Length: 411
Image 1 (cartoon, rainbow, N blue to C red):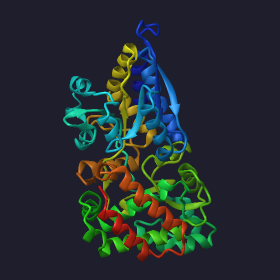
Image 2: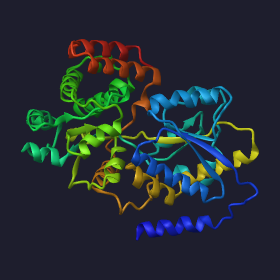
Image 3: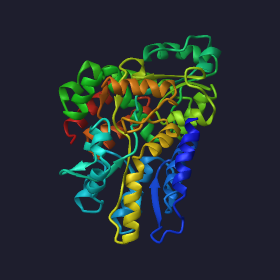
Image 4: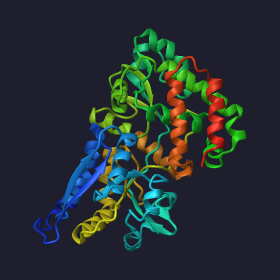
């Protein structure tokens, strides 16, 4: 029934003539290329095309670390796209300061974004000097451990309820021919997993002290030492993954070849495409089953400054469309993320999405790393973690010391 209602809503939109005088093509760049992601972005394209304009898809494979420099290079090099995905946070500060991003304040005010976007920190992350420069599209959280129920059944052990139980089950998984922890070779995956371990095992207060306050005493403390011990376990447990892309690692969990994966809630899109059911085929543990918190980061669309008046009009229509209830529902159900509107009916949400909604409703949230640190500082931490995962001879103690030095100079 819900999908029928959504289809009817979109069908009504299609009634707008496709030959409108001001109809125009608008190139939209993003890094959503996996099966679940492609299904989600297709919902945005369908909704935009229904206005009479044309979504020209500019997907860039390889994830944000690969796509983001390409996007920035095009904008600064005088070849801007019509709209581009970024994570809302500090990634676009320099582009905004250079006057290369469109001010969306008039659209945000007309559409009442301040009244509907929850939590308000999402819109705050789009705001520079009181002006709004992006349209938040979803809430994505990194803080999840995804578990294959089949893998643990094959190994003859109960599905874990927290990180320590997961680590304790690793030998049984290996005896059964399973990879305990699936992790792809893309650097951002180990970097993201480390941040999840920090916020989950050290706790949200320590996380905010380290990333937000750049508190070196907290960074040097025993809680972070425990995180590096956990990272040491993680690199040992993931040694047999031998895949590159994050969705390939997710597929190891889906097919029961691996016990689990630390990955953001976008992994849910892959489980859905594979026809798996949350709570039956797979289990999700927010905060690694230790501290069930969610970062309030996610994706947003920014609109580079264009000169063509018709394209500028199309930009404005797309910006407003992204936060419409029907767009939010269609996109986020496919993406596995949570809508930024607090008034969207999510009766169709699965068990894992409902866990996330409960966490948000209870206010157990933390800012994303991109909201707290500059991209340069985050990259330095990421580089350290990647080196640690790829260098078995590097001790947890040595990596911890270097981490403290990075936090000391972070901005």
